[in-house]
Length: 252
Image 1 (cartoon, rainbow, N blue to C red):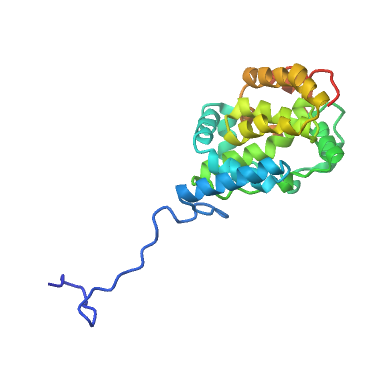
Image 2 (cartoon, helix red, strand yellow):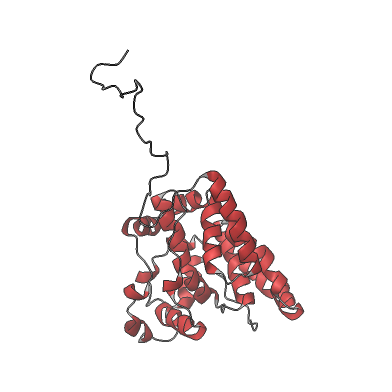
């Protein structure tokens, strides 16, 4: 018996309305909704690709998004519970070439964060615009957290005094793994050293790794620093404020 107000299908069956899959609505521009199985497949594929070629930043990005479901909420909570971190979450600053006053930063004195950051970008021929936008994180705020992590990665190189060669990347990944707990960082820290030669392995094991781990444990959350408002601050004083120990005097 038909309910009041409904029209019958000519053959006596009620027409089915197309249903939108639960959880498949994009939550922010560029978001690609995925199921747990799809995330697992993406994680496995991106992990293999990233291990084969650690400079595949697109695969490293996918790996970070599909495996960060536990670490990202923890990082977000650490930001919420810190005055400067909370302000970052509210204002959502972005580090892009379009937001950087390159001429002003180049004009800062040697040793200032902004001057050393630009020097790092130019010496290593890298750009903040190469950082992939978040796609697979199923929460708009957490998507910003991982985006912020990516965009301050080069600032970690600057603060730690590490270049973008394989040894420098491994050292930064160890620091970030201790700091963030992101599986992507842990994987890079654990498997990155297999590509190092014997001399660099010795330097890593005896000098750089103990310093990176000790600094990562001692430092406050690096996502709670509003770097865009610290360009004039010296790298040395910012290291001291965050709790990063001075880098060892070794050639990387």
